[in-house]
Length: 157
Image (cartoon, rainbow, N blue to C red; front, side, top):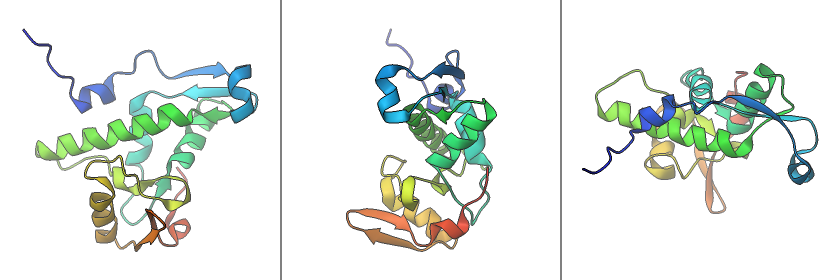
């Protein structure tokens, strides 16, 4: 019998022993500096993304900073935070398709520089549509899309 495919919501709720704070190793210190890094649990990233109200925005880096502060670490892991934001986005999309109304507003979480995330469900087109519905102006920047004056809509999480 084939193994049942794990849903996005199941992935979101599987913390696999996370969060954990680790010392930044020599190999990574060239890139991240010294100190400690928090590897968050997926649900923690989702909880921070849920705090962004309509008309407001945050970035992955802001979420990383909030996680680092919460866990008294030097930085939040860029790799896992990005992956968990992607899982949160897909879980929200899955919940919406199942008729749930209270989903994580993942489209309000941008990449550095206010750039839209092409890995979110539906790609940048779907994210652009949701952001424009909330009053943001999305512009093309080279090959990417970004929210115009996104800094004015950022919130502290």
